[in-house]
Image 1 (tube, rainbow, N blue to C red):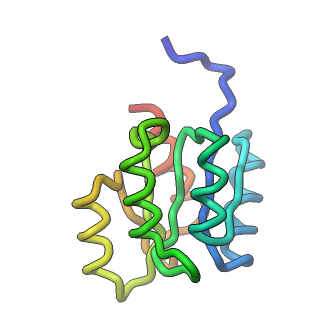
Image 2 (image 1 turned 90 degrees about the vertical axis):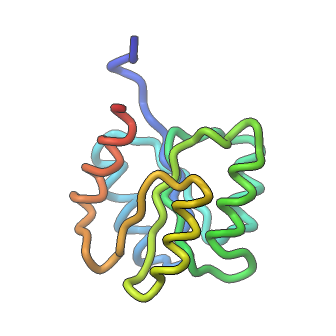
Length: 128
């Protein structure tokens, strides 16, 4: 039975500070714990100690791209079953297809979704 009072933790891996801030604010207001990482290297490091309930993962980032991070997540026994939603720009169809093939749960085209719609997707996945 799912604990109604459980506070879910969402990890946002996004190098655009503005985008990160919008999602952090929205998710915090909705009662989620939010863990941020501004690049893939930082994210992989944080995942050594943190097991979020869901990960929002940008595809294009410096040092280590989203697909590399996704590969690291999927081969890590501790976090491989954590749902991942890829954050993408319109032009990244091939990367999205790769990510979905690697086990991502969903993807969002940043310019097409409001933070409220992103929140709905997160809630849908967490409530499955």
